[in-house]
Length: 249
Image (cartoon, rainbow, N blue to C red; front, side, top):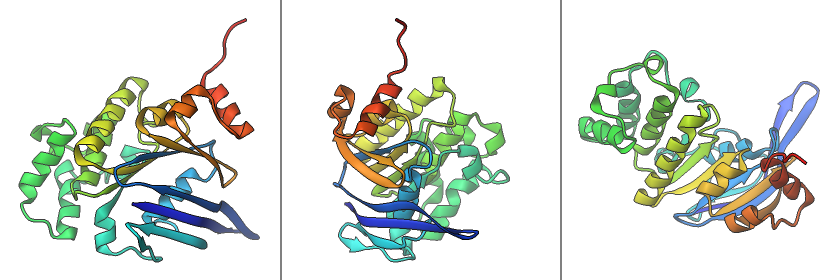
């Protein structure tokens, strides 16, 4: 479903350029949930944004269902591939009601029966119709993220890109959102890529996990290898050890 080959992404800064991703490559099968982990600044979110067409690639190729993606995504491409951002408050327009936030993508893509689709989208993320005409500031953090997920899924995409979807939420709410994402992916047969610094979150949702550091993709493990600490790279082993915390002597 998704194939990334020798992806390089660089940004111009004063006095030169910074290479955020260096020749990264991996493939994600249809219906698979794939994770990318690494420390802050490792390039994991940049890879996700490049796949979505939000940042340009300097080199390499991105293919969706075998089709090479150009610098600009078509309307069909954007409908098939939707993004859920880290901060649900920042990603929702503060002066638009939930109804308008969900109605806008339907209008852009020319969908019929918006009323039915909006109610169904809210129900799919366990929000009732009473939430339709509330503003983001009238919702909790978990409710805002549910609206963001509903907005992504209302166009019936085949691919869902998730950029740390629980890191801005209270710990008590994180498990609810993770379980919701797992259920929706299974029900809809979605292909997904989840970016996170939290190995436990990625191991819970993803069958395979890529580890990044300094813009490079070091290795790909399956969830069982990650839990068992069976990593080839020393950095990955350090990341796994750090995620397990400290024990008193």
